[in-house]
Structures are given as structure tokens and as C-alpha cells.
Image (cartoon, rainbow, N blue to C red; front, side, top):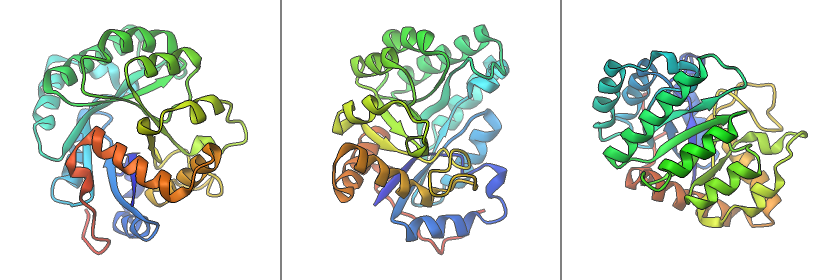
Length: 266
């Protein structure tokens, strides 16, 4: 099976047809989806989906766009969510200097606080990095070996970020961006060690070719995995097996559970 290592399945874009989305994913060979939390409320929604559903896991964190909401109360609520058996990682957290939806000092403070939380709780951390490579590198080198694992999600960083990720044993999760004509990070795709590869959709965003322009969904992770296998010169079945094993190593044994496409998902 394939694992979609990063999907915003709790997003309102899926409210009308979430069960159908999961049925299509299963038909495409996707057995597990990691549902991402990007705010306290979003993390609560992600956990509500995953809690009683085999084949779904969740993360809890505050995205850099929401970093201004970081507070002692937010930290307390995230800590409680992360105690849930369905919670497999801290995040999505990180830095985004492209959009700058939150002040950069607030982003750095929230990111470092969540790295510290991951280290304390013994959980992996899912990292968003956009136009902020220098500061991400500094924090990765400070914290990367103090947390069980770092996942650099939808990786599209430069050489320095790739090198820092390699130094701390990070996992590189590739999204549909690798199918875009303007993809310019071939070295990361071919240079990533086999035991550090993951695939994701980042749905409902970043639909891969040939689905670009549509709402992304977990079934489309197959197109990304096929493109990744082609770029690396590997058989698709081998890459699918490897990325699934890697996801289980990062997120734990819950990843081995698979969902029933007929199961009701709110």
C-alpha cells in the first residue's frame, strides 16, 4: 500500500464527500493517511477524524501562518491532543517567509516551542519550510537530534536545507510539486537516501500532474509516487513498499492499519 504522509483531510474542502475521497484512495492503493493539524481547532478536527478510524492518524500543531496564536493555553491544548493514541506527530509547524502571515519572530518562537514539545513528548515533528531556509537550518541543527524524527514536508528547499536535513537524519517528503514543469530540485529527489523518502499530497493543495488544477486528494499520491520512482530510476512497487516502511518507522505502528472504504467518516 501507499501512505499519504501529509493530508489536510479535515479541511472544509472535503466536508461534502470525505467518505468518497477515502474510497477512491483505497481503490488507488492508498492504505493510510496522516491527517494534518495546522491550528488548535484544526488539530482537534484532525484527531476527531482519526480517533476511531483505522487507516487514519493525525498530527497536532500550529502552522507558521497561525504562529501569532501561540500561547501558554495553545501549548496546553496541543499537549492534551498529543496524548491521544491517534496522534503520531507534532506539526505542522515551521517557518514561512514567503507569505509572512505571522510576524517572523512569532513564527520562530512558535516553531522552537513545538520542537521543544516534540523532544519532551518523544514525537516526530512535521516541518513546513518556505523561503526561510537559513533560519530553518539553524533550528534543525539545534533540535534535529533531540526529537525522534524530523519530516521536511513537501520538500522544495535549497542545498543548505537539504544538507542540514541530511545531517540530522531528517525524512524528505515529496509532494505533487515534483511533477510540475518548474520543479528545480532534482538533486534532492535523487540524492535522498532510500530510507528517508516519504510521499504526500498536501491535499487539498498541490495536485500533481495529470490532476493539476483540481482539488488534490489522497488517491493522487499514487501519481506522485510514480513520478518519484521514475525520477529515481526505481520500480514503482519497490518505492511504494519502501516509502510505506519509512512512514511506519517515522509515525509508528498505527501506520500499519488500513481503512475500510465503506467506513463512515464524518
